[in-house]
Image (cartoon, rainbow, N blue to C red; front, side):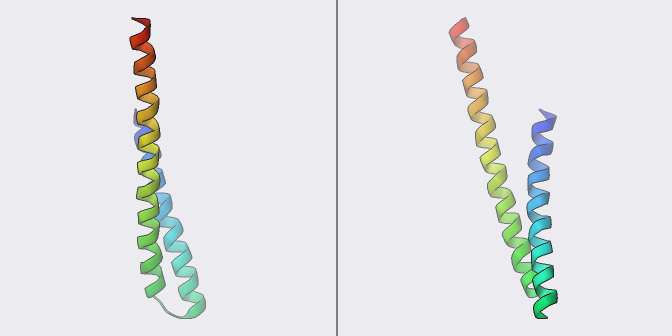
Length: 74
């Protein structure tokens, strides 16, 4: 169970980090500091949340399938 929690935390942090890096890089190139960094950090956060939700649904489906298989055996 702990590995699932860590997976979700890592997905969120990765989204934030990638968004921040892209925004910071574009801000440096275009000289618009900090606007694109803020926008891409928020977009990265939203992407991380979306990925976390997808992972949670996947884990729920796996858990339901395991419970259904267990119920069939009983």
